[in-house]
Amino acid sequence: MSQSLPVKTPTPRALRDALAEAPLRGSAAPLVVAPQVVRKLTAEAGEHPAGRAHVCAASGLVMIGRRCFVVADDELHLASFDAVASGPIEFLQLLPGLLPDNAAARKAAKPDFEVLLHLEPQHWPTLEGRRALLAMGSGSTPTTRNLGVLLMFKDAGAADAPLVDLFDAGVVIDLGPIFALLRQQLGGLNIEGAVVVGDRLKLLQRESQATGSCTVVEFELAPFLRWLLEQASKVALRVPVPVPVPTPVKVQRVDLGSAQGVALAPTDATSLGDGLWLASAVAEDTQSSYDDGPCVGSAVVLLNAENAVLRSWALAGSPKVEGIQAHFERGGWVLTMVTDADDPGVASELLTLNLDLRVSAASILD
Image 1 (tube, rainbow, N blue to C red):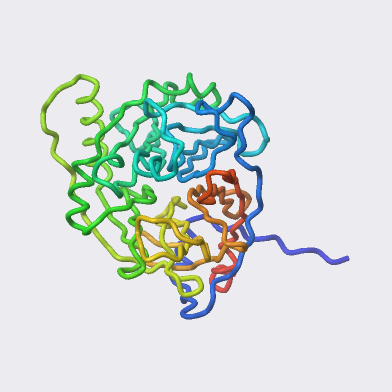
Image 2: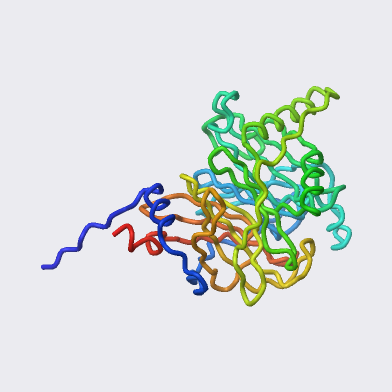
Protein backbone atom coordinates (compact mmCIF):
# COMPACT_ATOMS: atom_id res chain seq x y z
CA MET A 1 0.00 0.00 0.00
CA SER A 2 1.52 3.28 -1.08
CA GLN A 3 1.52 6.30 1.18
CA SER A 4 1.56 9.85 -0.07
CA LEU A 5 4.18 12.15 1.36
CA PRO A 6 2.96 15.10 3.42
CA VAL A 7 2.73 18.35 1.49
CA LYS A 8 4.94 21.13 2.81
CA THR A 9 2.87 24.28 3.11
CA PRO A 10 5.14 27.35 2.96
CA THR A 11 4.34 30.52 4.81
CA PRO A 12 4.01 33.79 2.87
CA ARG A 13 7.47 34.76 4.20
CA ALA A 14 9.02 31.52 2.90
CA LEU A 15 7.39 32.12 -0.48
CA ARG A 16 8.74 35.65 -0.53
CA ASP A 17 12.29 34.51 0.22
CA ALA A 18 12.14 31.68 -2.31
CA LEU A 19 10.72 33.80 -5.09
CA ALA A 20 13.21 36.56 -4.41
CA GLU A 21 16.05 34.08 -4.96
CA ALA A 22 14.49 32.18 -7.86
CA PRO A 23 15.64 33.13 -11.37
CA LEU A 24 13.20 35.05 -13.52
CA ARG A 25 11.76 33.47 -16.64
CA GLY A 26 13.46 35.99 -18.88
CA SER A 27 11.79 36.06 -22.29
CA ALA A 28 9.75 32.90 -21.68
CA ALA A 29 5.99 33.24 -21.99
CA PRO A 30 4.11 33.52 -18.68
CA LEU A 31 2.11 30.60 -17.40
CA VAL A 32 -1.53 30.65 -18.51
CA VAL A 33 -4.13 30.27 -15.75
CA ALA A 34 -7.90 30.10 -16.06
CA PRO A 35 -10.10 32.07 -13.65
CA GLN A 36 -13.57 30.72 -12.92
CA VAL A 37 -16.73 32.83 -13.10
CA VAL A 38 -18.49 32.92 -9.71
CA ARG A 39 -21.37 35.19 -10.67
CA LYS A 40 -22.45 38.03 -12.90
CA LEU A 41 -23.13 41.27 -11.06
CA THR A 42 -26.76 41.50 -12.12
CA ALA A 43 -29.25 43.43 -10.02
CA GLU A 44 -32.80 42.42 -9.26
CA ALA A 45 -35.60 44.81 -10.17
CA GLY A 46 -35.54 47.81 -7.86
CA GLU A 47 -32.09 47.09 -6.37
CA HIS A 48 -30.05 49.59 -8.38
CA PRO A 49 -30.73 53.19 -7.32
CA ALA A 50 -30.49 54.40 -10.92
CA GLY A 51 -32.63 51.55 -12.26
CA ARG A 52 -29.79 49.79 -14.06
CA ALA A 53 -29.92 46.03 -14.59
CA HIS A 54 -26.38 45.34 -13.42
CA VAL A 55 -22.99 46.69 -12.39
CA CYS A 56 -21.23 47.12 -15.73
CA ALA A 57 -17.88 48.78 -15.03
CA ALA A 58 -16.51 47.31 -11.81
CA SER A 59 -13.13 48.88 -11.18
CA GLY A 60 -12.08 48.45 -7.54
CA LEU A 61 -12.60 45.57 -5.10
CA VAL A 62 -12.26 45.02 -1.36
CA MET A 63 -13.24 41.71 0.21
CA ILE A 64 -13.77 41.32 3.97
CA GLY A 65 -14.63 37.74 4.85
CA ARG A 66 -17.15 36.68 2.22
CA ARG A 67 -18.41 40.20 1.65
CA CYS A 68 -17.32 42.08 -1.47
CA PHE A 69 -17.32 45.86 -1.82
CA VAL A 70 -17.02 47.22 -5.36
CA VAL A 71 -16.79 50.63 -6.99
CA ALA A 72 -17.45 51.11 -10.69
CA ASP A 73 -15.80 53.75 -12.82
CA ASP A 74 -19.08 55.04 -14.26
CA GLU A 75 -21.21 54.87 -11.10
CA LEU A 76 -21.84 57.08 -8.08
CA HIS A 77 -22.47 54.09 -5.81
CA LEU A 78 -20.66 51.47 -3.75
CA ALA A 79 -21.97 47.95 -4.42
CA SER A 80 -21.83 45.11 -1.90
CA PHE A 81 -22.65 41.41 -2.20
CA ASP A 82 -21.73 37.93 -0.97
CA ALA A 83 -18.71 36.44 -2.73
CA VAL A 84 -20.05 32.88 -2.53
CA ALA A 85 -23.86 32.97 -2.64
CA SER A 86 -25.75 34.47 -5.58
CA GLY A 87 -27.72 36.80 -3.34
CA PRO A 88 -28.85 40.40 -3.76
CA ILE A 89 -26.57 43.35 -4.46
CA GLU A 90 -26.79 46.30 -2.08
CA PHE A 91 -25.93 49.84 -3.14
CA LEU A 92 -24.78 52.89 -1.21
CA GLN A 93 -24.66 56.31 -2.86
CA LEU A 94 -21.21 57.91 -2.55
CA LEU A 95 -21.91 61.17 -4.36
CA PRO A 96 -25.25 62.95 -4.86
CA GLY A 97 -27.13 63.19 -8.12
CA LEU A 98 -27.39 61.05 -11.25
CA LEU A 99 -25.03 60.60 -14.18
CA PRO A 100 -26.29 61.18 -17.75
CA ASP A 101 -27.32 58.14 -19.81
CA ASN A 102 -25.58 59.44 -22.95
CA ALA A 103 -22.18 57.72 -23.16
CA ALA A 104 -20.12 60.82 -24.02
CA ALA A 105 -21.84 62.99 -21.42
CA ARG A 106 -21.47 60.25 -18.80
CA LYS A 107 -17.75 59.88 -19.51
CA ALA A 108 -17.31 63.64 -19.12
CA ALA A 109 -19.27 63.88 -15.87
CA LYS A 110 -18.35 60.71 -13.99
CA PRO A 111 -16.00 60.80 -10.95
CA ASP A 112 -14.19 57.76 -12.39
CA PHE A 113 -13.78 55.78 -9.18
CA GLU A 114 -10.92 53.42 -10.07
CA VAL A 115 -9.58 52.69 -6.59
CA LEU A 116 -11.17 51.10 -3.55
CA LEU A 117 -8.66 50.80 -0.71
CA HIS A 118 -9.16 48.95 2.57
CA LEU A 119 -7.50 50.88 5.37
CA GLU A 120 -7.18 48.36 8.19
CA PRO A 121 -6.90 48.98 11.95
CA GLN A 122 -3.10 48.76 11.99
CA HIS A 123 -3.00 51.64 9.49
CA TRP A 124 -4.90 53.92 11.89
CA PRO A 125 -3.06 53.80 15.25
CA THR A 126 -4.90 56.86 16.55
CA LEU A 127 -8.41 55.64 15.74
CA GLU A 128 -8.82 52.81 18.26
CA GLY A 129 -8.95 49.90 15.86
CA ARG A 130 -11.36 51.38 13.33
CA ARG A 131 -11.06 50.65 9.66
CA ALA A 132 -12.25 52.37 6.53
CA LEU A 133 -12.78 52.15 2.81
CA LEU A 134 -11.36 54.87 0.58
CA ALA A 135 -12.77 55.30 -2.92
CA MET A 136 -10.58 57.41 -5.19
CA GLY A 137 -11.11 58.97 -8.59
CA SER A 138 -8.45 58.46 -11.23
CA GLY A 139 -7.42 62.12 -11.53
CA SER A 140 -7.41 61.66 -15.32
CA THR A 141 -9.21 64.99 -15.74
CA PRO A 142 -8.48 67.99 -13.50
CA THR A 143 -12.15 68.84 -12.97
CA THR A 144 -14.51 65.91 -12.30
CA ARG A 145 -12.14 63.10 -11.29
CA ASN A 146 -10.32 64.55 -8.28
CA LEU A 147 -12.64 63.30 -5.54
CA GLY A 148 -12.27 60.65 -2.87
CA VAL A 149 -14.86 59.30 -0.46
CA LEU A 150 -13.83 58.08 2.99
CA LEU A 151 -16.17 55.56 4.64
CA MET A 152 -15.41 54.77 8.28
CA PHE A 153 -16.85 51.51 9.61
CA LYS A 154 -19.07 52.08 12.65
CA ASP A 155 -17.98 48.79 14.24
CA ALA A 156 -14.35 47.65 14.26
CA GLY A 157 -15.24 44.01 13.76
CA ALA A 158 -18.60 43.68 12.02
CA ALA A 159 -18.92 43.55 8.24
CA ASP A 160 -22.27 41.79 8.00
CA ALA A 161 -24.73 44.60 8.76
CA PRO A 162 -26.93 46.03 5.99
CA LEU A 163 -24.83 48.31 3.82
CA VAL A 164 -26.73 51.45 4.82
CA ASP A 165 -25.95 50.73 8.51
CA LEU A 166 -22.31 49.71 8.09
CA PHE A 167 -20.57 53.09 7.84
CA ASP A 168 -20.62 56.55 9.31
CA ALA A 169 -21.67 59.17 6.79
CA GLY A 170 -19.20 59.23 3.92
CA VAL A 171 -16.85 62.21 3.78
CA VAL A 172 -16.08 63.58 0.31
CA ILE A 173 -12.44 64.62 0.11
CA ASP A 174 -10.82 66.82 -2.51
CA LEU A 175 -7.76 64.92 -3.75
CA GLY A 176 -6.98 67.79 -6.12
CA PRO A 177 -3.89 69.04 -4.22
CA ILE A 178 -2.19 65.63 -4.40
CA PHE A 179 -3.35 65.00 -7.96
CA ALA A 180 -2.15 68.41 -9.13
CA LEU A 181 1.29 67.64 -7.72
CA LEU A 182 1.35 64.25 -9.44
CA ARG A 183 0.02 65.67 -12.69
CA GLN A 184 2.87 68.16 -12.73
CA GLN A 185 5.43 65.51 -11.86
CA LEU A 186 4.20 62.83 -14.27
CA GLY A 187 3.00 65.01 -17.14
CA GLY A 188 -0.52 63.55 -16.92
CA LEU A 189 -2.50 61.36 -14.56
CA ASN A 190 -4.63 58.23 -14.59
CA ILE A 191 -4.49 56.34 -11.27
CA GLU A 192 -5.94 52.86 -11.76
CA GLY A 193 -5.07 51.07 -8.52
CA ALA A 194 -3.56 51.37 -5.06
CA VAL A 195 -2.11 49.02 -2.46
CA VAL A 196 -0.55 49.30 1.00
CA VAL A 197 2.74 47.41 1.21
CA GLY A 198 4.47 47.72 4.56
CA ASP A 199 4.64 51.41 5.49
CA ARG A 200 4.11 52.60 1.91
CA LEU A 201 1.04 53.45 -0.13
CA LYS A 202 1.64 52.60 -3.78
CA LEU A 203 -0.49 54.31 -6.44
CA LEU A 204 -0.48 52.69 -9.89
CA GLN A 205 -0.47 55.06 -12.84
CA ARG A 206 -1.57 53.87 -16.28
CA GLU A 207 0.77 55.15 -18.96
CA SER A 208 0.36 55.34 -22.73
CA GLN A 209 1.86 52.72 -25.02
CA ALA A 210 4.45 55.26 -26.13
CA THR A 211 5.80 55.93 -22.62
CA GLY A 212 5.51 52.48 -21.01
CA SER A 213 2.83 50.58 -19.19
CA CYS A 214 3.05 51.58 -15.53
CA THR A 215 4.43 54.08 -13.05
CA VAL A 216 4.37 53.27 -9.34
CA VAL A 217 4.09 56.35 -7.11
CA GLU A 218 4.88 55.73 -3.44
CA PHE A 219 3.90 57.74 -0.39
CA GLU A 220 4.82 57.13 3.20
CA LEU A 221 1.56 55.78 4.57
CA ALA A 222 1.45 57.64 7.90
CA PRO A 223 1.76 61.19 6.46
CA PHE A 224 -0.73 60.36 3.71
CA LEU A 225 -3.31 59.14 6.23
CA ARG A 226 -2.70 62.15 8.48
CA TRP A 227 -3.39 64.41 5.51
CA LEU A 228 -6.48 62.36 4.66
CA LEU A 229 -7.88 62.67 8.19
CA GLU A 230 -7.09 66.39 8.32
CA GLN A 231 -8.89 66.85 5.01
CA ALA A 232 -11.86 64.89 6.37
CA SER A 233 -11.90 67.02 9.53
CA LYS A 234 -11.66 70.19 7.48
CA VAL A 235 -14.71 69.14 5.47
CA ALA A 236 -16.68 68.14 8.57
CA LEU A 237 -15.75 71.25 10.59
CA ARG A 238 -15.63 73.64 7.59
CA VAL A 239 -12.23 74.92 8.68
CA PRO A 240 -10.57 76.83 5.80
CA VAL A 241 -7.01 76.09 6.95
CA PRO A 242 -4.45 74.88 4.36
CA VAL A 243 -3.21 71.35 5.07
CA PRO A 244 0.34 70.38 4.00
CA VAL A 245 0.20 68.05 1.00
CA PRO A 246 2.24 64.82 1.26
CA THR A 247 4.81 64.35 -1.47
CA PRO A 248 5.88 61.07 -3.10
CA VAL A 249 9.01 59.41 -1.75
CA LYS A 250 9.49 57.29 -4.87
CA VAL A 251 8.35 57.41 -8.50
CA GLN A 252 9.34 54.40 -10.59
CA ARG A 253 8.54 53.14 -14.07
CA VAL A 254 7.76 49.41 -14.06
CA ASP A 255 7.48 47.12 -17.09
CA LEU A 256 4.60 44.70 -16.43
CA GLY A 257 5.14 42.84 -19.70
CA SER A 258 2.98 42.69 -22.81
CA ALA A 259 0.35 40.63 -24.64
CA GLN A 260 0.26 40.40 -28.43
CA GLY A 261 2.75 43.25 -28.62
CA VAL A 262 0.63 45.56 -26.45
CA ALA A 263 2.00 46.72 -23.10
CA LEU A 264 0.17 45.53 -19.99
CA ALA A 265 -1.08 48.44 -17.89
CA PRO A 266 -2.12 48.21 -14.23
CA THR A 267 -5.76 48.08 -13.15
CA ASP A 268 -5.53 47.23 -9.42
CA ALA A 269 -3.30 45.62 -6.81
CA THR A 270 -3.43 43.52 -3.65
CA SER A 271 -0.89 42.84 -0.90
CA LEU A 272 0.32 39.32 -0.10
CA GLY A 273 2.24 40.40 3.01
CA ASP A 274 5.98 40.43 3.72
CA GLY A 275 6.65 42.86 0.87
CA LEU A 276 5.01 40.84 -1.92
CA TRP A 277 2.12 42.23 -3.94
CA LEU A 278 0.13 41.35 -7.03
CA ALA A 279 -0.99 43.73 -9.76
CA SER A 280 -3.79 42.99 -12.18
CA ALA A 281 -2.98 44.27 -15.64
CA VAL A 282 -4.62 44.48 -19.06
CA ALA A 283 -3.34 45.15 -22.56
CA GLU A 284 -5.66 47.64 -24.27
CA ASP A 285 -4.84 48.25 -27.92
CA THR A 286 -4.88 52.04 -27.81
CA GLN A 287 -2.18 54.70 -27.81
CA SER A 288 -4.08 56.71 -25.19
CA SER A 289 -3.71 56.49 -21.42
CA TYR A 290 -7.26 57.89 -21.13
CA ASP A 291 -9.42 56.15 -23.76
CA ASP A 292 -10.41 52.50 -23.66
CA GLY A 293 -9.33 50.09 -26.38
CA PRO A 294 -9.84 46.43 -27.29
CA CYS A 295 -8.49 44.18 -24.53
CA VAL A 296 -6.05 41.77 -26.20
CA GLY A 297 -4.64 40.23 -23.03
CA SER A 298 -4.69 40.31 -19.24
CA ALA A 299 -2.45 39.05 -16.47
CA VAL A 300 -1.61 39.05 -12.80
CA VAL A 301 1.92 40.13 -11.99
CA LEU A 302 3.89 39.40 -8.82
CA LEU A 303 6.21 42.14 -7.52
CA ASN A 304 8.31 42.72 -4.43
CA ALA A 305 8.52 45.75 -2.15
CA GLU A 306 11.08 47.37 -4.49
CA ASN A 307 8.62 46.96 -7.41
CA ALA A 308 10.71 44.35 -9.20
CA VAL A 309 8.63 41.94 -11.27
CA LEU A 310 9.11 38.36 -10.05
CA ARG A 311 6.51 36.37 -11.99
CA SER A 312 3.48 36.82 -14.19
CA TRP A 313 0.50 34.71 -15.18
CA ALA A 314 -1.57 35.30 -18.31
CA LEU A 315 -5.33 35.02 -17.79
CA ALA A 316 -7.05 32.63 -20.21
CA GLY A 317 -9.72 34.36 -22.26
CA SER A 318 -8.25 37.81 -21.53
CA PRO A 319 -10.92 39.00 -19.08
CA LYS A 320 -10.56 42.72 -18.45
CA VAL A 321 -9.87 42.44 -14.72
CA GLU A 322 -10.12 45.82 -12.97
CA GLY A 323 -10.27 44.81 -9.30
CA ILE A 324 -8.33 42.16 -7.39
CA GLN A 325 -8.05 40.87 -3.83
CA ALA A 326 -5.99 37.94 -2.49
CA HIS A 327 -6.24 35.85 0.64
CA PHE A 328 -4.09 32.93 1.83
CA GLU A 329 -5.98 29.65 2.14
CA ARG A 330 -4.80 26.04 2.57
CA GLY A 331 -1.25 26.71 1.49
CA GLY A 332 -2.07 28.79 -1.57
CA TRP A 333 -3.43 32.14 -2.66
CA VAL A 334 -7.04 32.58 -3.70
CA LEU A 335 -7.62 35.59 -5.95
CA THR A 336 -11.02 37.23 -6.23
CA MET A 337 -11.41 39.58 -9.19
CA VAL A 338 -14.02 41.76 -10.90
CA THR A 339 -14.21 42.68 -14.57
CA ASP A 340 -15.22 45.62 -16.75
CA ALA A 341 -16.35 44.74 -20.27
CA ASP A 342 -16.33 48.40 -21.39
CA ASP A 343 -19.92 47.89 -22.53
CA PRO A 344 -22.84 49.33 -20.51
CA GLY A 345 -25.01 46.45 -21.72
CA VAL A 346 -22.73 43.75 -20.27
CA ALA A 347 -22.67 42.89 -16.57
CA SER A 348 -19.36 42.80 -14.72
CA GLU A 349 -18.31 39.37 -13.47
CA LEU A 350 -16.88 38.10 -10.22
CA LEU A 351 -14.01 35.69 -10.88
CA THR A 352 -11.91 33.42 -8.68
CA LEU A 353 -8.50 31.87 -9.24
CA ASN A 354 -6.33 29.57 -7.14
CA LEU A 355 -2.77 30.74 -7.67
CA ASP A 356 -0.20 28.32 -6.31
CA LEU A 357 3.05 30.21 -5.93
CA ARG A 358 4.74 26.96 -4.89
CA VAL A 359 4.85 26.03 -8.58
CA SER A 360 7.12 29.01 -9.22
CA ALA A 361 9.29 28.46 -6.15
CA ALA A 362 9.21 24.64 -6.02
CA SER A 363 12.87 24.13 -6.83
CA ILE A 364 13.88 26.25 -3.86
CA LEU A 365 11.19 25.23 -1.37
CA ASP A 366 11.46 21.47 -1.92
